[in-house]
Every structure is written in structure tokens, then in C-alpha cells.
Length: 544
Image (cartoon, rainbow, N blue to C red; front, top):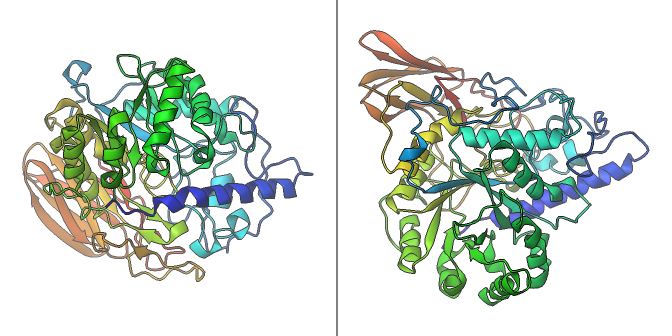
């Protein structure tokens, strides 16, 4: 059984959103809102620092790492992008070598590049989501809602700044080799209570502007207000998206609908929805439900489904590459294929949720590598990267302050192995460094921080720095963590060198025949006295 506490995540965000809106009402006489409101095409409000109590002066605006301090900036605005090779250990294969398998990244509307288009040192992320007393103390027990944020930018002199940001995220995804976003639809498009209701349509528009080949898969979130709709209401809600050019459809024209937590409604309910889409709106649907509990629901949904998926777990113990028992990822994919359905395999890096005081042990890059290997070994047709930008889960792949673009680069080898059916040839020696900025046992200075606990069934917590190398020939890897150096003899190909995590900075070198061929430094130090608990892995690259 796919046991997850993901169900709690989305309602918690909506509570935070409600608090933000209440704050906005409380200061309605002032020329600001606690969160930007209105459509994606309106001017940004003149945001001033919120009136909530500031965090203690010992807490940085972005705990443990600077806002905008990463050198590996996101691709610039403008132009039509394409995958690039300079930051990767291999040459990006031409389109002619791709096998037709697709990679989508789950897009979560509440966390765009910017919430208010102001300086990142004083924006809503910095003053509300990343501080203990933000959002009117709503997350004081967790030391703040988030531990990471999107890669920062300076304010844009453009009234359509939200649209420009969405276009930039499309460019970022394309540059990472991703085919499209699976957009989480949390509310009706007509919902004027928050700006995020306009994001799905705006994201589809952004994809059409940047590159018509980049597609947006519709993913109604059945753990949101969407679940209160009738089949006819949901059909009416999905219908306008179907006519938009960059909405994802199969080659035969069928509209792909892939609801998250589909089992909230029985298969009969979804059958009515599919029928109404066809008879009332003349839209044929290819239904691809995303389950939390696939085994309990796949038989009932089989007759109405084109494919299936599950949300997945985010630790190596729950994502074994070799296991094929019915509960394993390989077993779930095999069962779907036996039914004649396609399978969308979840690929993940990590999961750490301060707002639920729980985390998975990803074992540095191990969970990421396992999930890509499962996608290939199971012959999955599609992949859903979970997630592009859900920072409340600590699961984001998008360029961020915590991992820059290095995580997408580290994931690219698996992505192109999946999309071509063969591992790319390594032509540039590259090293990726992953680590936490604190030991699991570190006691945070913020005494109100509720300790995070390991998710039941997860891999055991560990304190390690990892250097993941992609080498054209054997070399010696030296990892210095604080005052201790660990040496590994790395073979050609992909190899992992683990070193004990200690307080201090981290430097790794790769030497071949007395010549240094790669070097990577941690952008953050491991601290003995963190302000908050933060169990997210940070990532750096020798090529960034």
C-alpha cells in the first residue's frame, strides 16, 4: 500500500492562503496586500514589509542559505530555449534519437518564481514563508512554512510579470529536457479569491508562447475544492482548457485528464465525467488517474482508464530497483501493463515537510537514481517528476536557492537514459555534491521548532555528504568535510563517494594522473547551531 501523508499538505497550504488573505483585509487601508491578488495580467502591488512580528534577529531571511546567492542563475528571459550540454557530463542527444517516451514535471501553482515582484530580500517568500513569525505566526511551531524558495530575480518592469515568470519556468523545464508540466488544478478558474486560479490557463498560454511543443497536462487535484464539484461541473471546468493549443492531448486528439488522488471519487463518478465530456462537450478523454493506493483502486478504474500512475514514495527503501512484488514500484507498473494500460512512473529526489514535522531519508542522490532506474526497468511510457515546485514538500526540482540548477543537471543523466533507452556517453568529467547544512541530531536555536521525525518505513536517517561523479576514465575523488578528508577510487561511468557529514565547509576534487579534472564546493556550510531544522539536501555542481 502506498502510504503517504501527502493528503495533509494541500489543506495546510490553503490554511496559509486564508491567513494571508485575512492579513490583507486587516491592512486594507494601506496600499499593499499580504499576497498579490487579481489576474495574472495585472500590475504588481506596491508591497511593503508586512506588519507581522519579525523573526528574531538571529534568523536570516532565508534560513541557512542566502536569497539569490547562487551563481548558477536560471536561463534568461526571452528567446526559444533548448537543452544545453555545457553543464552536463554528456552531450544532449538530438531529437532524432529520442524514443517517444515523455517526461512531465508536476507544477504546483502556489509557489511561482515571485509572489509580489519586489526585491527578494523583502518579498513574501523572505518575510512570510521563510521566517518563523511569518503569516501572522501561523507556522511558528515549524519555524516557518518553507526551507527553500525559487531562484530569485530582481523586480521586472513589466505589468505582465507573472506571465513572464511562467514563460521563464517553461524555458527552465525545456532546458532540462522536460516535455511538459502536469499542472495541479486546485480551484475553479472563475475563483476570484486568489490569483492562483488563473495559473493553469496562464501556464498553457506561456507554453504556447515559448515553444508549442511543450505541453501542459491537466491534473485536477481531488484533495482541493475541486472534489466538491459534480461530474458535470468538473467537465464544464475542463472544457475551456481543451481548446487551448498547448494543452496535452494524445496523437489521436484525446484530451488527457490525470486527476491527483483520483480515488476520492469512485470509478462510476469518473465514468459520468468522461461521458459528459464526450456527449455534452464533444471532447474525448484519455483518463490517467494518479492514485495514492494503486492496488486498491486499479481494478475498478481499469475499464475507463487509458493509463495509470501513483504519487509514489521518496526514499530508497520504498523505491527498490530490483523488487517486483505487487506493492513495489516495479510491481505496480507491471500490473498496469498487464491490464493494457500505460504507466506514468513518479521520479523524485527528496521529501522534507516542516509544516508536518516529517521527512524521508533520500540518502543523498540514491532515491533520485533509483526512481529513474525504475522508470527505465519497468518500461514506463511516461514519467512525472514530483515535483517541479512544491516547496512545502521540500520536493522541488526547479532552480532554487537551495540547489540552483544543479539538481536538474544531476537528474539529466537519468532523464535522457529514459528518453533514449540507453545511457549517454560521458564526455565531460562532472561532480555533483549533495549534503545537508546540519546534522540530523543538531538542536535548532529556534526553540519553538517542533522536531521533524522520520516517516515510518523510510530509509534510516543518516549524516553524509555525497560526491556523485560522471567520469570518462577512472580518477581519485577526495572529499573534505570540515577538517576530515575521505578518499574514493572512482571508476569510469557513474559512481558515488560518501563522506561523513561534519560541521564546516565541503570541498571535493577529482584528480586523474595528478591533474585535477573537477572541483565542487558547497555553497553553504554545515552548521552546529542551525536556526531551524532543515533536512533538505542541497546540491552543487562542478560545472556551475
